[in-house]
Image 1 (cartoon, rainbow, N blue to C red):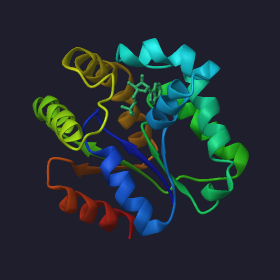
Image 2 (cartoon, rainbow, N blue to C red):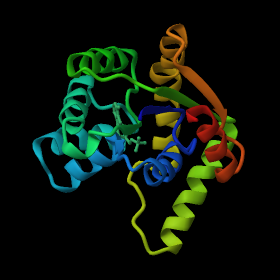
Image 3 (cartoon, protein in one colour):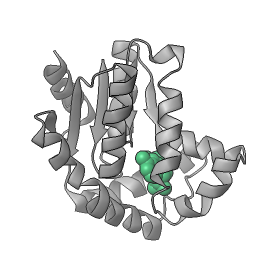
Length: 192
Ligand code: AMP
């Protein structure tokens, strides 16, 4: 099973991807998580990505395409994977199509979580409150200014991806405003 989740920041892509990894026994590949690890480890990629990420902007296509291409070659991706936060630009989607073709792999579905944007800032604020309450560390880009910038990047660069996948009949849309379990059930119906 090879899936892509699309949707703005805070739409619940990560939450749904995590639930599906357990159900299907395939890994969640979050480029945001991979980049945050690179930043924490101060690798070359991490050093290049940090300021861009903190400002809520997108890291270059070259960096993320390479990270993803290497990651999907790992043995734990043999049965499939769930891409969360990638692709995020039309050039990334084109690169992914080419990459999968070269590796002899096919996508099973592209699932878009549709959400009301005014609810997203509230979700981000709740995520910060819950993380702090649980003693966790808040993401450095989870602040209102960076979040607004991430939403703007989404509208300008990522929203056109729906069109890219719709054109080829691969796009499925789910109401991401429903509660977590309803959203999961809807996704499972699509995948059944
Ligand atoms: P996320 O955890 O998916 O919200 O990603 C956090 C940040 O990582 C984004 O705001 C971008 O700066 C960067 N990032 C993650 N995935 C990508 C991607 N596919 N392309 C470019 N930048 C990305």
